[in-house]
Image 1: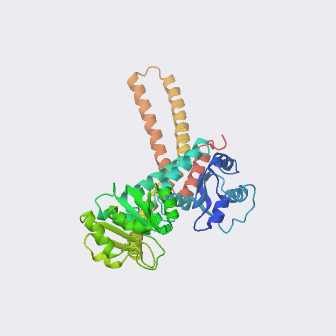
Image 2 (image 1 turned 90 degrees about the vertical axis):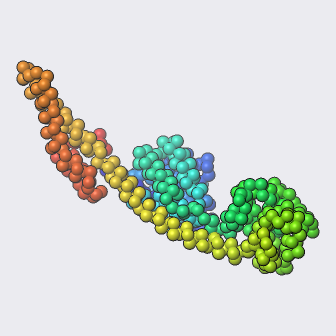
Image 3 (image 1 turned 180 degrees about the horizontal axis):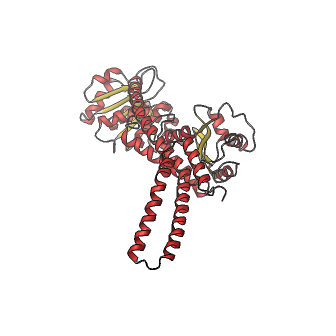
Length: 426
């Protein structure tokens, strides 16, 4: 029987978060889930993938009929036996489509944010878990490792992950262009809004050394500062601390400007002209837009950052097209390998049978020609080997070059014509 591959699952495009949460498996369940999947009729190998955006079963089979339905039923009732109608949310991919899907997942082409790097590491972990309990074999081993190499090729040959595509990450990207390095820089967060806090977190994650937090409600500033290991500053006094800040983030609900020209001029005087990067993430705006005209002050509001992020998204989409071409090439490469899984045992068995016949007949001949010397015996050995190789050349070439359908025909014909035992029956 031919090997085939499939993927059954759901993701952020087909199921809302509540459905994904209900189907998702906890880390401590994964080993049992992988073992159980391999016990499903028709499933030869399996590995479950479970992230916040997807729950998928990657599998190999040689029977095909009904396998996807049985996996879908397992997903439907697996969590505490809670029956749930998953049919509207589930997809299943077979053959080349399945190979393409896994390669796209690994390359972050199927992610909520195209180009995000986390999925590849997650994929490696889930494969390792399945392999550790013996749920994977030659097919999934090759398939996953091919997916890892495809992802690496996409990262190397395209710029799919090179540009920031969220407002907060765009702020970090712009800050890095203004300062030679973010290491050791100090940021001030004015207000405790979620977007501002996310931008601050991005900056800290990219090397900014310290953070000050101020808010009209001081208790909230203290609470957020604790989360960031930052310094809380009373709102009425933040102008005194402003000269210490290389980066200032505005995220308040104020309807008037909280950062004025006068405050910036005073801060620059104490900073001896060292630049200040201002990120105004509020609507209405928190920072007086006129401060952008001051030398050594760089002001970006949420529209500016949104435009940068959108431009970067367009660039990522262009790079994603290059990545799709890479995936297409690699799908065909893997598919040829999978097809040869069926061919190789037949070729090996055919060679072994012909070699056994050759050796048996040669021994009979040499036994009746005892007067032959070593040179003559070697010549007969070489001649009979050459005859067998020439006879086998065309059949083996046909076996290797056929597509999956013709390949199956040639395999069956070769086994019948030469009476070769089917490895599935042996």
